[in-house]
Amino acid sequence: MNFSYDIIVVGAGHAGCEAATAAANLGSKTLLITMDMNKIAQMSCNPAMGGVAKGQIVREIDALGGQSGIVSDLTAIQFRMLNRSKGPAMWSPRVQSDRMKYIETWRGIIENSPNLSMWQDTVTELLFEGNNVTGVITRMGVTFTSRTVILTNGTFLNGLIHIGKVQIGGGRIAEPASAGMTEQLRERGFRTDRMKTGTPVRIDARTVDFSHLEEQKGDIDFHKFSYLPQVQRTLTQRSCWIAYTSEEVHAALREGLDDSPLYNGQIQSIGPRYCPSIETKIVTFSEKTSHQLFLEPEGETTHECYLNGFSSSLPLETQLKALQRIPAFRNTHIFRPGYAIEYDFFDPTQLHPTLETKAVKNLFFAGQINGTTGYEEAAGQGIVAGINAHINCHGGSPFVLKRDEAYIGVLIDDLITKGVDEPYRMFTSRAEHRILLRQDNADERLTRKAYDLGLASAERMGLLNSKEEKIEEIIRFVNNFSIKADRINPYLERIGTTPLKQGVKLIDLLVRPHIDLGVMAREISSLQELLESITERKDEIIESADIRIKYSGYIKREQLMADKITRLEEIRIKDKFNYSQIQSLSTEARQKLTRINPETIAQAGRIPGVSPNDISVLLVLLGR
Image 1 (spheres, one colour):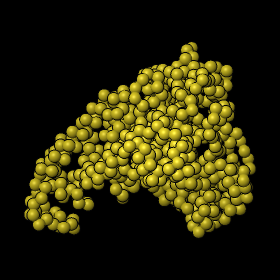
Image 2 (cartoon, rainbow, N blue to C red):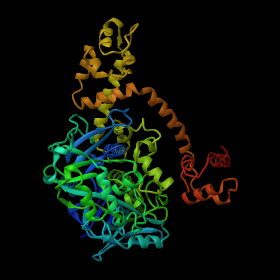
Image 3 (cartoon, helix red, strand yellow):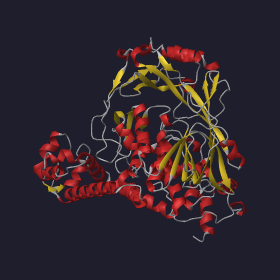
Image 4 (cartoon, rainbow, N blue to C red):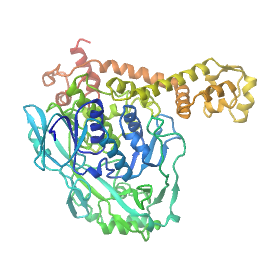
């Protein structure tokens, strides 16, 4: 057996799997070390991928040549496009996945990836030569050397599980924690802290009275995650179900608050504000008489269900008592209670935009170790870390995504610039250019970059070129096709929209609400012929063309704003100033700029506590 690699990835969660496959597919000899090869890409909490802003990240990973979108489609048991009632910048794909098939599919990809090996063990120590990481030592006493190391430890670093007053060391239920690395890195000057997350009770569907639940079916249309046409949903689609808590349920939960680790001082770490436990909900939103819950299947054939919205660390008896006061769950049997877990994370302002640490060369962090929450955020960091670790080994320019190029770029910039004071979760509101960062155009934004790196295949590039050619053909047609008022007014009057007073170009009609290419094709035979000539991914291409046409003004305006900010992104200031000596800066700015040492003027402006006046001072010192 060979014990020397280009890249070692520690942890086979969503970040680790994307990092390892990206590095290996680029040509780096890669080793993925995991405690349990049967739990690769385990969905520790909800068996679902995507959601608001998170779905955009999964599409971006796919556009870059990553695997999460492919695996999500192949293992989907329900697909929904969220926020369809809003503008396309808010549309967010989400799938409910078969938990076991998700693991199986990911493992198949890893086992069949060239340049990628696995080792089942626990890493206990990192090896260093001066300021460089050089490998790892495992619990079995095996030493592996490498040119780079990527840590994607998730919730395993000194993980501690809480169920009421019961405390169990572990990274997930029934899985041991990892000890040693936090302490070793802390000795090297890394700043670390503790975070908390949680997961709900798992329910046996055979003991649920579904007559008390509201059915929520998935979408049956062309939408999916992967841009590859051969990747389709093939599993039996299943419904989710909606339930509600009540005052009776809340009363049962309040009886157990004295034994809640969140409220009796047992848990001191930072919890997620945007995905609170049920006990946090009844305390924080005490005026609310009910909260919505979603009963979601864990797989295509299993009876196990996940009760989304009922995350808890309360004692087992309290959870069960409250649960059984919901009519659908009066006689329910559970497979296991919800629990909270505390774990170590590292201040992400200690990272470069490549996710390499500032303190140690060739050491990368990705995923929850950086203070994020969610599989999608982890996977997005993983693919960027894998790409940059490969570049460190073999040369090339650092791979950094800007805020106007990808949600992944927003995510990483937020982490390294602002740090975290709670588990970081992506939202569309975090992106100032979200009309540019839609789920439909991730391939247009990123596939060329990935192809130039060698990560996206020629097939992907061909699909992108074909899509863009068809969209441009449609846009040329609607810009040039004139339509007479008397030809289209009867239709416009039928649908209750203002008739034309004179002839217009077709594009002027398409910007109206409720009028799209599909509608106009039924009225204009030449448009119908053009759309029918699209033989592959027809619906996807027509939707993208519609969005470009309807929102062209907003898109152009947003791009102009992004271009202005890009000019500041090009003014590099890293290591150019001794901020502590610049007395014209505010005290807070001197402290923050010294600690983060931003790459550019634009990044400096995003640091909390750095004012526009401070930025003006720096520009003056630069002679601008």
